[in-house]
Length: 627
Image 1 (cartoon, one colour):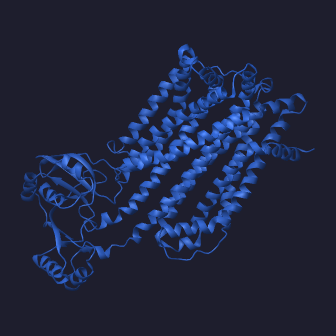
Image 2 (cartoon, one colour):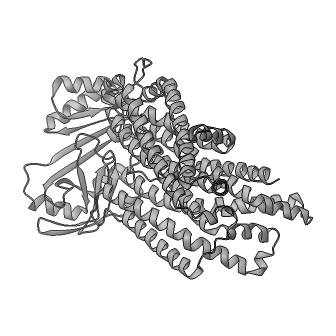
Image 3 (cartoon, helix red, strand yellow):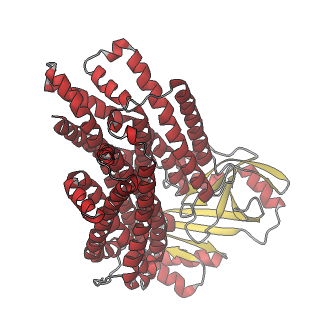
């Protein structure tokens, strides 16, 4: 029998173990194919509204490739660990090491190719539904035809075959170098861990994680570009998490084992001893799961942030029923006449006189408009502003200021700076986003004390003030007749509710749609890894639990021990992953000018509920295998 036939036979015999892996791979390839087909689709290219979505999909595809390298590599390592004993038996039967290594590597390669073929086939079948979903959520009225993208098939195949080939070579080398004497009892080796060395690793990991948090939270203050801050943070969090679990988990479990009061309580002696038995592998797996949980939650938080951006489009563009830049008293008269003829009632008017100021404060802020705080107070007395509490809290005293950026701009730079304006020092107490002036003056605003405003009014050199006027009607949306009259008699810069086009923001829904798909890939893969861990530990513990039954221990006691043991594995990574994602959520919400608490903790709640389902399913599978 040749190696290929033997590999196929082994694959059939282990199809139950490979089932979850193949399902995860097929699902991931299906999603990846659809992402790539979106990039190459001629139908999508013709829709200008979705070009930003295509660009973001490219970035998501790169993230998925990196993730697939990790997931496939982890899965292959799992299967090798599971079948080392089988490898050892082949060796003692006289089969050469290189042939056995080739046999197992071919088996993994065949599994991957099967998943690739099925995944692409399913991707083609659901592709039309995927593209229809993208177009539907973007509210674009266009018919999507069924298409098969040869470029998407080729790129998907090349990416996954490259990863599979890499894993094939890695598996082959790993198996060739494996010590034969350790194979027969590979699963039963007690994994001793040096506590002193592990504690130092844990402290190092904790330090690296804290450094990563400071890096991402304070990147604006240090004027670090956001892409560099994200990349540096991801690398440090991954390294820190690996070291944290190598030290912290070992330290905690060892202390519990030494504490007899805790150890002998209920089922702890069984649960914790089973954990300490495989502590090295546990540390590695827990760290990987914690990182994967962070990826899942971060994707979910980002998706919900994008959703909020869409819903806030009107607030950004139309903070008043209509607003304009008044160049003369005649402009004001025309607006008043238009409102009078429309018979609409005015709720309130906002009058802001901007002092334009050009400077080179930093690479991001080259000019801004200075306004007085009392004018903002008048607006807040009549309507609710975004971040109103922050504006009131930072009410500028003489020599102080607040920087406001438009809410539709990315907030990736430090706004807490000190300025020297017209020989007067201004300390900026805070900087954040709000919707005060809409899109006509898409610039940064500096709010100052009334005394400082008067000083700048008299000392700064500028052509003339920019007179911003906002009008809010009782019937907020009834601006058609008013805007038509104004356009007829003047060419002033103005914007009104009837000019707002919600379709300009609908593409964000497509980004949200893609973000949810990316989250689903992480969720399914997370479930697979936990499932692999479950069947791996259960197959090892089966003999131990059979021994306990022979000693008269009840199944109820064993079930409690298993639920506790599995619970420890599930609880530690989610605690670390949630903390990571809270920090990530803070950075993402800050970038998109969102308050973020509801988005972040809502995402965590949704994920936790799904995670609990994973825990219950894994514990029950564990019990089923060990019975």
